[in-house]
Length: 77
Image (cartoon, rainbow, N blue to C red):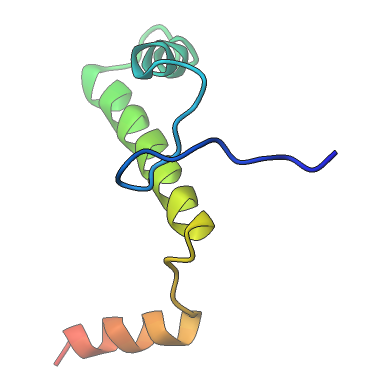
């Protein structure tokens, strides 16, 4: 059986079967009890960034390593 990707929203970000609130709760519950507010926010932001990045890959919105390096080098000028 081939795994399927979840549907994407209007921005191309994957929509899971869980509601965003439930996803956030699951991420927070996976953190140590003594996590700071900033640490929890950082984990939530990282999880969202990964979701968006995977949606970009699925949608073909990627660049080669060489192109990425060239772009970064152009910023230094």
